[in-house]
Length: 555
Ligand SMILES: Nc1nc2c(ncn2[C@@H]2O[C@H](COP(=O)(O)OP(=O)(O)OP(=O)(O)O)[C@@H](O)[C@H]2O)c(=O)[nH]1
Ligand SMILES: [Mg+2]
Image (tube, rainbow, N blue to C red; front, side, top):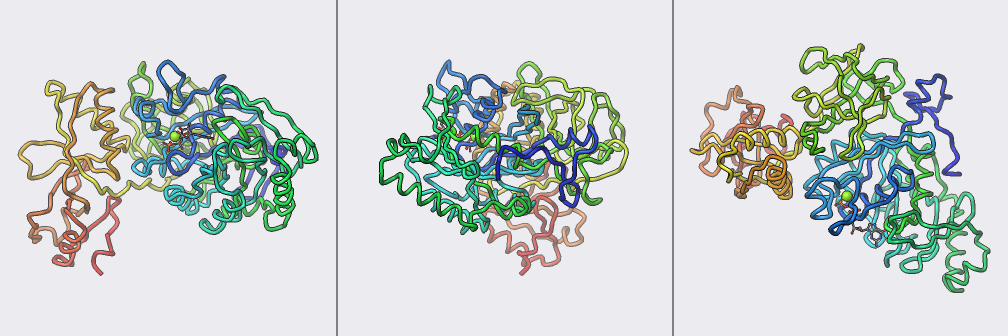
């Protein structure tokens, strides 16, 4: 198919395309809301930057690992991200391109931040899976893919770093099919590889887009369109590679590789694109393809059934909180995915958790750490709400027709550290900073029941979360802190009113604590002690962080 051609199409609840009927439906139909996911370092932030460059949203792309005085990547705006060259938190970027509104969410790849990525995947209609051509499908990509699959999210694949020595493209397609059980349909095919990577062949249009390298990719690459029979192509590739290239292209015409849009929409097939984000090679065809392939807003699952994005009734879900994004506005921003209807500045919405109406006085369009007031938004949009203290992750809001979106589960923690405040005269900032970071979901904060000093215990999925807490407390709250790893690896939650609770004899190795919601938590040095407690107290219900019974322990 011609990836760049299809017009905006609107999908009804049963996923069959219907013609846009009203200006409102056209607005919804022109939205494309997607997350970029992968194992660390595959090039998500670099690709994000280049999509912004080609869409005209930025004029010059920064480098991810920015040296002093260089521009740095738009989406890695946090100091720690710039210092370390890794993404720590998801970033929302809204921009317009060829009549379409893109809501792009760049996610962190590191598994210690996977809870943030997971939340973001709850708010999108499709995902871009970035693969490093030398590494193929890496463990974290696979895990995130499983999350996408559980939500039936359509996935587009961008195979990156073709400018470096990598695996054979056919072997990469084979790996996608074998490991992810998804049909991989190439939409273009690389001309040359490594230092000889010169362009991509568009399989539908049967033309070749040749690239020229440019100033480390900070500006658009010069391109030239030619045909596969152009002698210049053979002159660049040499007779042997040219022969191989022709054979591959012939093979790809086979029906096995044909792109099936319906299978893609069901998450069973993925269109595959090749490129080198750092050099801007293959970025423009990918951006064009996104218009036709990335779906417009889909119905969102709610406890009341699927919510049609084109319903006239406004609804939305808060999927992320982020404080202190803009040093000039040290406030907390709630990221809202508009799930249905039209949002208007100053509209009155109902907040079921607070059981009251609130006025949406300060909605923002988000572009990484930048913000500007928006007057309206439509289903599919991600907007920022800066209403202090009103929102928590997972909050539903709606205008008139009651709806409740499912809760966004927290991840069960596996590492724990005691946090000491070294800036004694700033205990207020220490407390409020920690509360804020807890609300953002950066880390969970517990207080031990039997510690003499009331020092907080951080509970996390991975160690890097502790580094984020320390760095952000220092930079955003002026508080120096020292984390000290504790020897616990497992946790369980127990209801205090559990009938079996009072008779438990607590082993000395466990630590009893209370979480931010005043729930009772127990920490164990190893899973063995946790199983032991379960066996000794068969009627006691041990729960995970989401409150679900940990059934595997009783067997
Ligand atoms: N050679 C080459 N390097 C690339 C390319 N794209 C990105 N890189 C480099 O790969 C490294 C990681 O890039 P990022 O864009 O930060 O990767 P990421 O996937 O966002 O990483 P996390 O967000 O930390 O998971 C950086 O040093 C980039 O300059 C490419 O096409 N070719
Ligand atoms: Mg990144």
